[in-house]
Image (cartoon, rainbow, N blue to C red; front, side, top):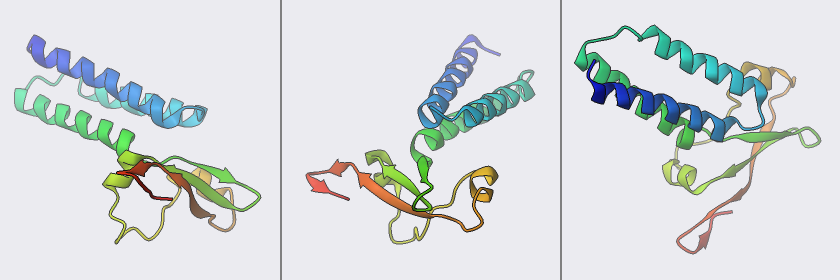
Length: 135
């Protein structure tokens, strides 16, 4: 493996760990699971040497980082109202297709099985874009 590819792989590994910290701060279980999953994927491909395969893996690293930073919206369960409250950040709002999105689901079995009824998802606020308030 060339030193250039090695540097890109290590850089991607660090970027994934930073992205998971941004998304899962305060959620000890998700932090642990994401650390194990990231490490497992890198260990699984530790002995890869084919440049084309390595380039494909680097693309997957980039896509995973983008998904963690921009494709997942974190919410907090409001038990009194039985709702998940989410704050849509600018990068999420820009990536959403508001004409086809009809609902959001919790991303773990644990969060969805804690309640006999699925809680609603409520957007509590959004960031402003172009001078318009999207809330």
